[in-house]
Length: 422
Image (cartoon, rainbow, N blue to C red; front, top):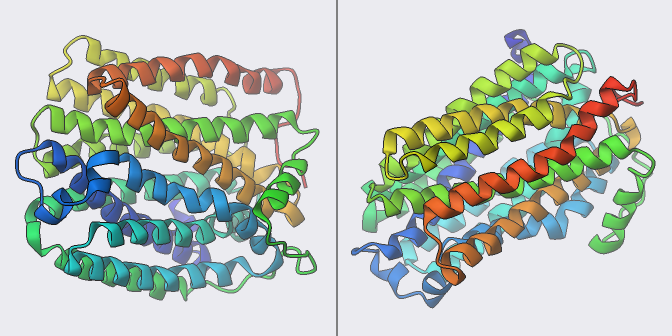
């Protein structure tokens, strides 16, 4: 499996993806910790002065990050078919440098509203990167190694999220009123990611004659038509969207949980580290089980396992060690789920429309992530639920949805093809 990393383009893409995911999550975690700090006794004065921070809390930066994916995803999906995906990767990494420079300025000026603008711009940059990043994997490694490549991408991405979230918590706790120093670090990481991406060899465009449209609504409808007649692909995209909605909701809940337990930011960030370690383990297991095919039974298995992991906290809601175990098991189950889902979404579409399908899948994923912000706001601000209640209720919701994904396993057992279609 690790031999894939020796391939120049795939290795460079994996490293660039790691640095980008690390940087994005280090920045996003820091912003979320700033918003969550308002429930403590000593928030930063410039954050405390912001009515936006008080009114919406974590829900606002979370929503602003996801919104560009919904608005721009259909357009960037078409773009990933029309031009070389490698060029898009280069452009997206270069854009990240500018976005992080804006973040550095926002920290220096100590303006929360400008920081929110930067969060939106970071989402826009990531929206450009997504369809090309996932659509290019099959072009770089081929069908035979697709599951293994996805396992590596998933594991490296989760490692980036894990380390980035921890670093974001450390920055929030250590730099305090000198957050411009964190901004400088973000610019450096972005520059490294861009430099690494330049090692990728340019790939040819999949459909250079395809017309580029600029209406996201009509483009989204067009993308949806590309999956007509493929019930398995539609269910896979819907299930991925649901999963990302719940994953984003859990991220906010865990930060609130750590604050509720009185943990400092760095300690709360290590809670996410347990989830990340679990995902890496689960992704490796899923890749080994899948081999060269798609192990569809892991999809409902992973979701049921995720739900069961949350119920552990009913035994002792204030136990930090038990919470760490719960989060590790949740991550492991997530890793089992994500590999077969990602392989289905990448492997089934015809090559000329693979970028469009990845764009559709990314829009659906971020529609789910976008919904996580209002859902958290509803639970925390409106219903005033404790983090424990939100944690277990979210797990129960996953268990209910998991029953629908048994359809993917049934399709495999009945002989309906869920292998790549080209």
